[in-house]
Length: 564
Ligand code: ADP
Image 1 (cartoon, protein in one colour):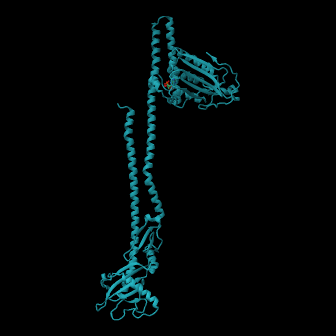
Image 2 (image 1 turned 90 degrees about the vertical axis):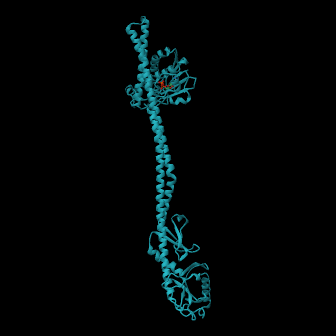
Image 3 (image 1 turned 90 degrees about the horizontal axis):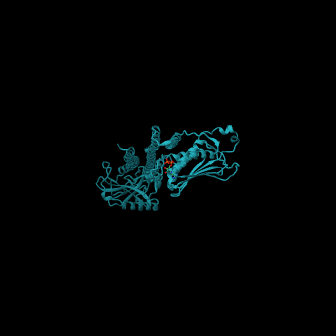
């Protein structure tokens, strides 16, 4: 059957890349969709712009064409030997008309009323107008013209260009008299009227939600305001129809600021969407991976713990059983060995109960149900009694237990059983891991504001990098595992919890090959009226409440250390 861990790894190996791939695909698809939607809406916006420009150019062209039609229809020059008509009433939109004979000589300009051949009026002005017209007609493509008739109203042409820095639109056509003689008519359109009257009228007529500007040959505004560089993105610009082809028309939605902001948001989204979502998912996956790894480590440690505890229970139990049976069957040699067997049974039973105490206390801590029976007392008394319990085991391992207890230590608020467990665990570890060192030093002495207990061995020590971890539950240092020393990995976690619940601090000082010193610093009991009152002192504080350490030492007699 595959192990749970490898099944999880397999799932992670497939599921995580799948999640990453799906996220990438989703964000790419989302981004593409958003971009194509925005392109579509921009295209429809531009379409609206284009339609408006075409409609406006079309209606202006229509009005110009109508004026031209009326003009060409109205002018009739039947007799080439006489002057052409000069009493023509110009249709609205036509500024000036020139009539030319078959040799393209200007024969009449309207309105300048008198004919060119019999000049009258202001000769200077007339001369200028004639000069202008001569300039215009020179650039016209007369040869391509077919005779204009009302039945052929399209037989005329336009010229739109700058003359003397002024935009000029000329409409010109060839006509024939009834006798078949050809003559020509050219009309200059009134562009000022077109810009000031026709354009506003047509724009009003078309209405809509767009800004319109019309620029001349050198980009001077003829109508409206030219578009700023900033709004170029939504601008539609094209030549202003077939007639006024030298002008350009610009159309732009009125809510361009809003569209601009929307486009900017889309751009930002485009830039940030994929990297940010990938980053978030990456971080999320990393967190999940780390917590899965931590969970797996804890569950591995738990199963190791169960195996270790079972093993630790099994050894003393088999010894108790074996020596119990020997005693029961009377197979021992004499009273001496009977006593020895009974001692072994007692010792192993003590070990068992120590282990079970550890496990039960640990389980209580894990469930958050740890409770301590705090009372003010002398730590030296508690440590002395605990040492009596530990001494047998130390001596059995052929080790020397040296103790140094300073007399006159201040009282400490503590749970006596818990403090016994602290010492037994520390000494037990020294016996287990440092038996080669042969010596264990237990010292109890006064420090500013409290009492300190230290347990020192001369064993292999603990590597620096593992020191912070040995206080974690279930953690067992590599050396312990390599040397096959029995243990459950909960002893120091328990000690740390107890010490901290007493408002103290547990630390280790060790260098490989130099042994290890575990130090427990506890605060002295506060000297208050309550502590002077025995009834109040007997009441334990609520669980988890740490008695505050006092900084001022109680005046206690200092004395020499008692060595054993
Ligand atoms: P256990 O002894 O049951 O493994 P502990 O919580 O008491 O669990 O100790 C955690 C680890 O700390 C041990 O596995 C061991 O590696 C290391 N350790 C504790 N005390 C000593 C010591 N005196 N010398 C060397 N290593 C020690």
